[in-house]
Image 1: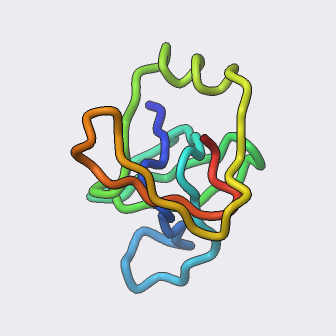
Image 2: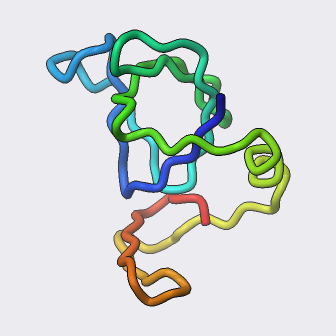
Amino acid sequence: MYGICTQTMLPLRESPSDKSQMINQLLFGDLYIIKDKLKDWYFIETIDDKYESWIDSKQANIIEQADFELYRNAKRYYSMEESTSITDSNQSNLIRYTLGSSL
């Protein structure tokens, strides 16, 4: 399975628990591969640096392999703003992202 971070930031945990230490984070637009599942947690590997960790499945945004490959091979642009907000194309959802987010 494949995923993309659609939140401003997503905590990466050392073990599958909310009480586990946050060891890294995903930023908006980051891609990952889901390698395993344990109860309500996914064990993932990030695409950019091959970092492995756990995310809460409630925070995961699963995408199809074709979409994953499309995003992975697309030219990337990164936010240079400390914090920015935009609305989606329907003007219905506010999207927040931070410095370094992939757009």
